[in-house]
Image (cartoon, rainbow, N blue to C red):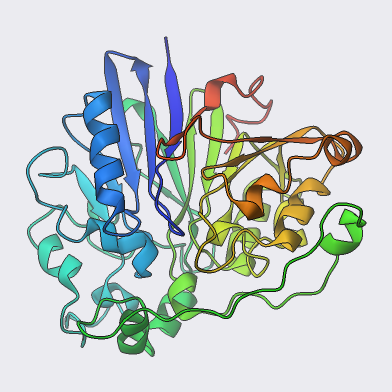
Length: 363
């Protein structure tokens, strides 16, 4: 039986995702996207061991934020599945300005050191994993078993912007020894229920302008007639434009959408949600550090259409369990799903989410 599953590994406020796919349970390939924090390594290794994974086909490190990259430091090249991935996608300093041969000014950027021993960005000939020069989503060579991959972010412009702040951004991400990652201010909460969710969704918010997030590698994966969007921490303008282009003037049918930036209101915009037609959304965060997901962002998802929707959370926490409300669920046509236990990955069988969309073969 054909397999196409997403596992959201417990990664605190970060991301660690495993995509498992193949023609049968006996012939599976795996894509690992980000590694969360150092503590995430235990959860990821446990999951891969339980699944019997001997190797990783593709490893993607979407950008330099600590809650995405930290868990990969020390794992890449280690014994086991991470010994020799078929390809590793990561945009280092050399990719921010591709005509430079220097490897960047930050001491302690240990992932780059290890990547020099690995297959690094083979799919792009060693160049940046990014959009085409004109902003068109970039189709990369198919992976094993015919998995189609299209890059939705970053743009060349966003990579250039990061080049100017690479050293400070890496310091903020915790990649410079002795300099801890920075924290954002606590966000005020909403009493979501009893309120008009459409009014909350329409609240004006600033868009994400963090240079590091702008370099995020966001992907569209297509397999067995289904589509999975992995939004990383991508800026909403780039991600929205890519999805609109693929939809050719119509909302793009997507089976599962891992929302960008852990459900931040600065990334999950009304325009982004209008660019897709989707019934299932994923939020990856424990909410303890940056207070994600934002109520405004979840309200936008819930009110984005009249279709029945499911929001998949990989943690039970105050900012996710508050959406369990029978009256609100009935009024706005949504439901919530969680892992069975707090230390287990959230598992989603993409092939069971409903019939394939009619235009899935058109992209």
